[in-house]
Image (cartoon, one colour):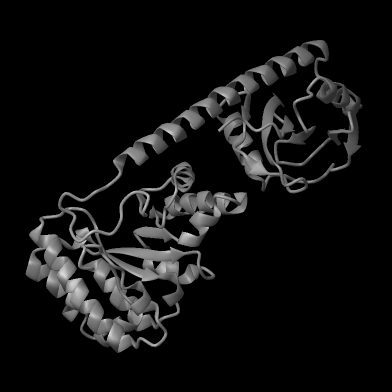
Length: 363
């Protein structure tokens, strides 16, 4: 801490290649014990995150009960479930002995966080072994998400993945409102960065900008609300057009020349990119009818199977639930790379109509 009270990070010291593991360990233990003592004195109840290098744990492989953090938690009366042990993903190739010591932390009640997730090639085997309670997203991805949809989609994918394995997501390094909005939209439990609060010597009367959270929550809510309304209006409009077409062309999908009818239908749906028919097992049974240069063109995808695609799974869930139509979540078209979604309509028990749309709803 400077003389003016400004808290300074020792990150450069720990990341310096000239700092040995032993030197880093000595300094770390001083800071770690002080932080735990301060946490107990201030009677804090938030999670206390402690970053530990896996290399430091190997010597405790045969006596994990002697781990300093465990002893200090007992000394200061801190419940183990309030402490989060952080390790970085780049240390995943540590020995099994280190991983076993980390598992001991978990067994006695500590929580485990995986820091800098995505910085290096993710080791799925280690991830499965550790079952992290919290996944901290690499700061670079958050910053790059402002300019790249690839990174924004990656954040959403990590959040979805974390949900499936029972881990919570923490976004770190948030410095702008746009970054916070993106992280909020991607879903997560924890948010960290200078936009929210700067490092402080004590959490007592800490300065935290809660207003930025309120503003971001309102922004994300409004965007989601508008998206839902827009999507619902589009679905109602498409339902009406399809049903009108079916009244004028009953059972067209059971006739020999279904593509002539589909071309006619496509001409009545200027808001779509393409339409086609599939069987209930995902096999395409018609040409693609696509808008090109103001007219409808045929593309032959007959016999292709789309059962592996996400939109087909969503369509199947809709049909099984007894609903006649629905809209998929937004995805990127393989060919155009544009954001699209798919409308689906059940014609009969064996035939489904699909329409890909590139006019993505607001939000």
